[in-house]
Image 1 (cartoon, rainbow, N blue to C red):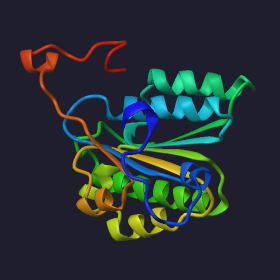
Image 2: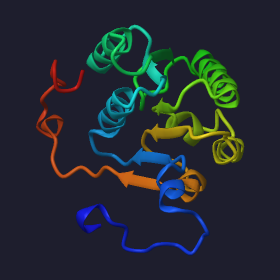
Image 3: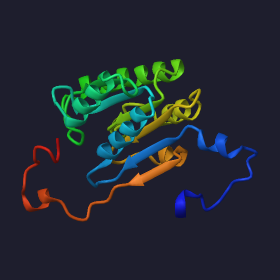
Image 4: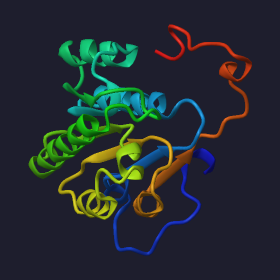
Length: 198
């Protein structure tokens, strides 16, 4: 995509402006680091545009205080960009299934809130952080998710993060990034670090 120009312009009858303002469904998946971080970077861009941002953390513990949350909350309260609403419904770290019953229930409740917000067009930009996990584990029906996200009203952008995103979600997405891992300090036995992992 040289100089920001698409390599193909579809014959869809849309103007350049209409095509540029089309809502996108994006997925960040794969085993590498950076899926959520990239989504939060997009949320910063949305905030800068003055868009209301909704963050839904599906699996990471509600007890965790992550840097992205603090930064986006401060920015959302600053009155200079868009508002930021942060929802936590997780019970534990993403790839460890602890206390399955309450985590599954919390994920389903979170999805119901996302559906209500999409129907009401509450936000212009949604981060469904670690949402690929409840889909992969079968807690939430992927076909329903694809249908709701595909048919959402208005110009609401949605980014979904997490390993093992289902193929049906990838097929429905406008943008898919697979974060691969080449090397990680944990491979050499190093624990996660403050300021790097959280």
